[in-house]
Length: 219
Image (cartoon, rainbow, N blue to C red; front, side, top):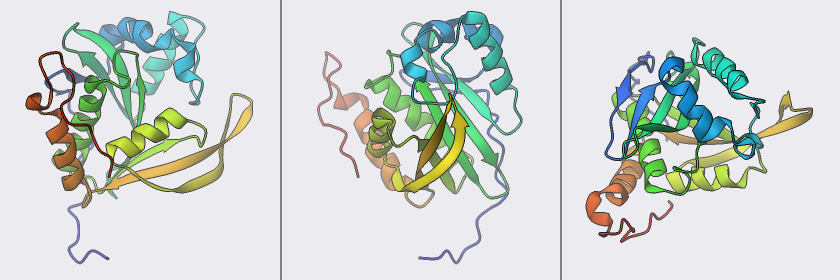
């Protein structure tokens, strides 16, 4: 159904320095504070970079150089995911192709093993999606990955994204052609997704051993 009320545009650029959570905090990426920890959490594991265009990295210096370059680009904002239990970086979020005029932004991520298939990883997504779609009032949050990246596709569906289709030959990287599957969450879809994720993340949904009481259902 077409919208009849014009959206409030342009949106603010995502530049918040910190987004606090219960299990994790999101901090604006800073090489001096985060590069070494991110190298240990994600940079040194080549398997985490096999299905995405960047990496793998030869050493910590190469990773740090890439991290500084990416975090310094005007059309992107990077957030380091900090595990509150250890106070160490555990993963990295990217907000890419930031289009404040149209209220559209793409989310990318690299999760370390402390976030993958864990409550902390779900909370990290929830915090950033809520910030983009609620606080900053973006109209569209995108998620893009390769057709063969099964883990990324499962995560997108679990978080509530809708698959829109496949774009063919979108890039050439790592000596091969890449296709891209596009997912999105629209602003009008977010309230129901936010309610579902928020209920699952509530402390009362976990027992004394940290095990979920109710599963996070998709859709």
